Picture 1 (cartoon, rainbow, N blue to C red):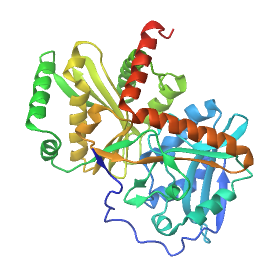
Picture 2: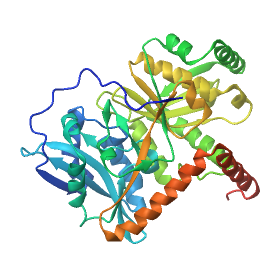
Picture 3: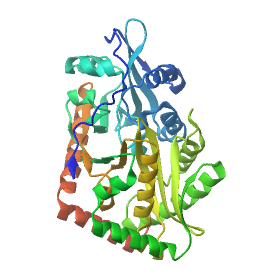
Picture 4: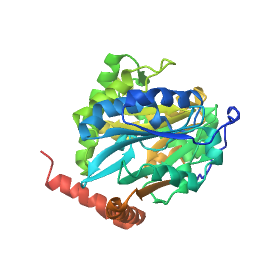
Amino acid sequence: MNVLPLRPRPTDWPKPAMDSRVAHLEVIQDMSAAEPHWRALEADHCVSTPYQLYDFLKLWQRHIGTATGVTPFVVVGFNATGAPLFLWPFGRRMLAGLRVVEFLGGKHANFNMGLWRRDVIAGIEADDMHAVLARLAGRADLLKLTNQPLTWGGTTNPFALLPQQRSANTGFSGALISDFDVLLRACTNTSTRKKMRKKERTLASNGAVAFEQAREPSEVRRMLDVFFKQKSARMRVLGVTDAFAPAGVRRFIEAAATERRPGGEPLIEIYALTVGDIVAAIYGGIVGGGRFCAMFNSIVPGIYAAESPGEQLLARLVQHCCERGFDTFDLGIGEANYKTLFCKDAEPLFDSYLPLNTSGRPLGIALAATAAVKRSVKGYVALWSLVRVARRMRAHWFPAT
């Protein structure tokens, strides 16, 4: 595994604008009111992850955020001419009686970051960041900012200038090239490729194997029906809370997978590996800036699982991304053996718990300490293995009703 602090910057970035000084700050508590500034930054090829696209977070707020008590708290900095320089896509909710501000997107955004004009990133300093936070003190008590990439798009995340700690999880990604066969040979040895071909032949003996993208709304709903059933079954076995169980999550993902972006592609792209009439594996992800970000996956339990349909679908999906000219593929956050097949680069993530007043300080300390303990547990392989075994045992002896 390689630790990737910085990817090469694209060569087609626009030239910096002349005025990148923050002259005015605004906190917007309505998604539609923030939309013009949001889209202006997106159109200007700002630095941000696909999870901060307006259309993506608009749907998340509509179907999940509002129902969970989150209200938009979008921070926008403008220059003297009124042009947006940055946008922080935050939401505010009550936690332990305090006003806590977090990134919109919740558990469904693997990477959290602001939208930044590139010339602003080049010149911003820690004092500038603290000055913005000071102006938020009357509106919130604590900023709880998790899973922030240290670098993105060839730049360092400006939030890394603020007090931070290493996240419990790490992101995993890999560089792509146009020739998938060359990439596959670089990522695997002869033995691994032989095993992959054998599993593909075995799977094909049960029916025609096909790689499909769900495009029509009816096909999307059919694939999602399968995904939610497969994911729910898997989470029960693992003894882990199913983040996809709430009704609003289904509505959010379905809306994002059926709404079209200007180029004709959906916000969330759904892919499947089918064996005859059986959906053996599913992947869902979001695209932006030449990067495919996998959000979720599932595989069918039973006889097909032994032939690694998830791995076979992953290989076809990576090939598809190579053919589309993407330069990066990521499998989100959290460690898993299958991720190192194509995503050998570890992308450091950090968390910040920033009290804006004395009321927020005790909660910030408690949340930071809890996150540090979680990181420590995950860092000890033997201890983390015990946690996972305990979860499986609990799920076996005390199944959820």
